[in-house]
Image (cartoon, rainbow, N blue to C red):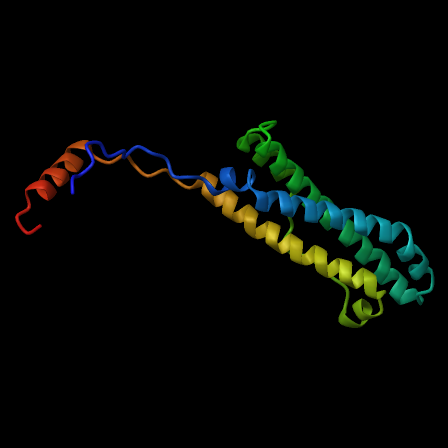
Length: 176
């Protein structure tokens, strides 16, 4: 076996954010998010409106606050997805997207209704809230991975003299 003549030491690591936003997994996530937004809007404008009229006062208040919280969460998700898609399509640099993302804020803390108020909500609204919460958690996780990957310090370039000495030692090491 022969050692390669040239060992490339100055290659940058692949950044997760750059590779993820151009992947099929991101396209599927984008599609899932947009479908959930459309589905929620259709429910809140249709069946949800009718169901909310039939609720008692306390449940009606819970419905109003939870539907607003759901809408806000979905708009945050849509903003994040659209920013990432803009980066993937070259319409925006990752730095520009980060600046815009800071204006939107993906909130991880969220006050919610009491258990009894939540259970009084229509089943379909509770399902949509659960789906949005799971999608939001996934996006928060991905956002942390992307942000940490983009801001991670690049490794210092290797000392070329030390590298050459290591190759010489390996080449002339009698134990191999």
